[in-house]
Image (cartoon, rainbow, N blue to C red):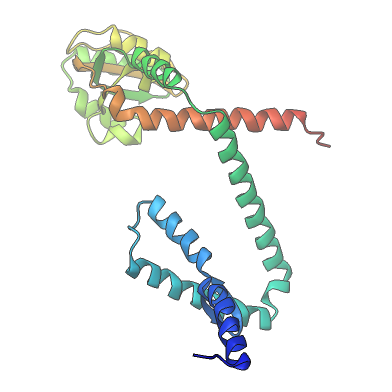
Length: 259
């Protein structure tokens, strides 16, 4: 078979154009939407665990990108992007994207080590202690008020009834109940007084804290329920990452010339 030059040129042109066409999933008013952009969005969605790569997902993303392109072209026609408030929003978004990328690079270069996670977990365990306490309290403004409450309790008054006059709105209507908690959950003065009580006992003298004067009753104690490291490892790692980022930011702020 002899192919005429004109037909040969047409065939070669089609062969050259085909790969270029295959690189785009669609065109909107002449503006191409690259297949690579679909791939990028698919990777992001899959990485976030929101879906698995599938023809249905790709088709949905393709339609979304087409819709966005139609809208941005119309917005450009209307000059929306030239508005001062829109320019400011774009600049803020640009800053956030670049800063987040830089901080992600910093964490990648300065990862949290397993040894750091273990040390932080052990520190937490030491702070929490091996016991949890179920306590009640009555909070008042003056020492004399607290002493009067203690006297009434010694005279046979019910703690739950007197708790209604407490300044702590979170527990006043619940008999002063603070539920189960570890000592680290309270200010030091409160914790020291609470942990020194025997089961069922009430503080003999008012306990002063930054909030006022407390009368404390210890209902019971139990072994602390601390989750194993494996369950909280990711959470601890994220907390340490945030500390690293905060320290990095502070370091940069100290170096900067701010007037």
